[in-house]
Amino acid sequence: MEHDNLDQLKDFINKWKDYSPQVPDLADPNAKQIRESLGYLPMRLPLRMPYEEMLQEVKALRTGFVSHREGGNHRGWRSLCLHGLSSVHTENHDRYGYTDRSSAPYTWTDISRFCPISTKFFKENLGYQQYDRIRFMLLEPGGYILPHEDVDWKQLSALNLAINNPVGCSFVMENWGTVPFNPGSINMLAVGYMHAVYNDSDEDRYHIIVHGVRDNAWSTYITDSYKTMIACNE
Image (cartoon, rainbow, N blue to C red):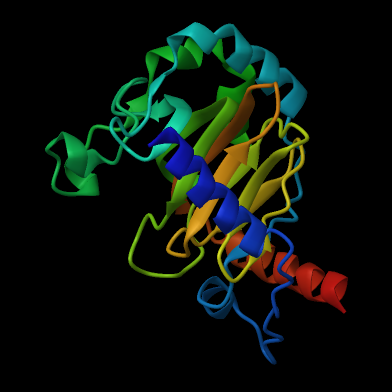
């Protein structure tokens, strides 16, 4: 089974890793159009993510990470919630009996006091009106997440922030190629597209996934980031 998983993963990555997508040149772009048109968007934000300090905080919590999506088609995928139902309730609220967002008691979890720099960044800098889950995501050396779709709609939604991204670790998306991640980079992702991750390195890979409600300034951030993406593809 493990051999079959790796064959499936490598076939998918080899097929799509070097794919150069045709980024749509929207005549009069707005945030809604952009979110409905792309597989990923590298964000250009007026802030600096303190990724070096975040990396030290998250490494200190390494032994506390729990397996994410037990029984799924992955290996070495672990998580802790900085904001959520608890630090170890890493899946969506409906998996724990809460039927909607308003009934789910999301809060800063117990690990937030061990992560003052990360917590301050999200409370003061990122520009969200409210958070659902903020999850540290660990992919161990040799770990992988097999090709999958998280939702049945294709629209930019969650943010994925790279604390580090070891050489050899790749996030590959069907029809969109390799998502550009470097330490400190932030991408908005449409995880309704088939995608896979493989940490073909000897280091732990740490990212953060953020779900929540963004403030109004994000419309400008999205359109400005899209225009930069278009310019880079010309």
